[in-house]
Length: 258
Length: 256
Image (cartoon, each protein chain N blue to C red):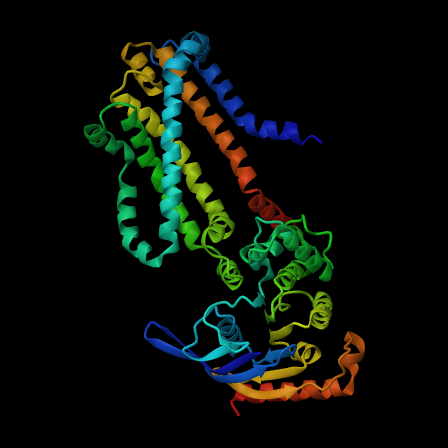
């Protein structure tokens, strides 16, 4: 049973190598903007104290969670409706493609006009950006439910809420999760961007503050923290996905074995 | 019991209309096992979908116990060819069998009893907690049959259910269908493209023509009720009937 060390090596091998390379390459750096990694790591615990995590990082994460959950609920809900109805798809699809093509950061100044510069605006920015991959993948997943399963459900008169819970949502599950995964990274990006425009706290705000006050190692440490958060969220996402879609991964594994 | 009356189905797509079924009428009596056999591409699946209420015929109708079929009827269960795709992979075998019973609003104890009985009937008493994709193809089709059996249908429709399993499994499953039919007294309409299978299983074989389809011949199979893969298939009468059906299908193909 040497699978655990093997998997750990696969997960952390490349990142460790890259960090080692950064350490080595920047060790003798005298550039003001590219300080040695040693120095960045040294300031990390001084910058990201419990206090600061509470005032800057937690509010950011809370807004991220709120925006993301809104996007997930809206995207899956509306996606199921559109995916189920051919008429609705015909009406909605050109519009969806248009909105999807707009880069979400562009919406920040517009939304500031409507929603001000508080939490509300930031949550809306995150939600409107993360919505599209979830919505479009849900539509596609619901539309592509296997017709044999649909026939089976119909023949056994399975309808309404039970059909939604037992057929539509699980069948579209793998595609919905593909959308949810894309949305995680978009939501993180928008969390930071929304805090760079107009804010007085938050992770993005802190990074910008450090940059403006030429606290370069501190700025880099914020970037690293962002990376760590992204990594943690991706890992948590995988755990949830493996649990919810266990049948999908099991099926694929069986398929490879045969 | 099951009356098919002048069923006609024309598909219209992109300005081209294709007549799949022309004029089909036949009758399946209560408790009968009737096989439908026809040349490939003769619209067997279209016919079955019309009878099951999954597809609306262009004209004509199906009556189940005297009532016209307008949607999937409550007293009808289906087993489709694509066993791998007709089971819900996110549910265990037992949950798959139970799902239609929930829709029927049966109490929990009764559901559990029906599921256990149906799984035992198809020889999968111990597989309830497995997932469909952990089973072989033949076992998956047994689960689909168990789901149909647990539903307690008056009519069981089977659409080429064994077309995708290997020959040995197929023989086992054929005997399973005969046994279920005899044990439960259910009416079965079995669609197949396999002439041997049709003659081996059926009390009657309805031979379909080429598309646009009509009934070519309605043949009574006068083989003994107790059938056995070895003795029945080597019975001279079996050989004669089989030859006759083959001939009819050849005729149907050439449109004679």
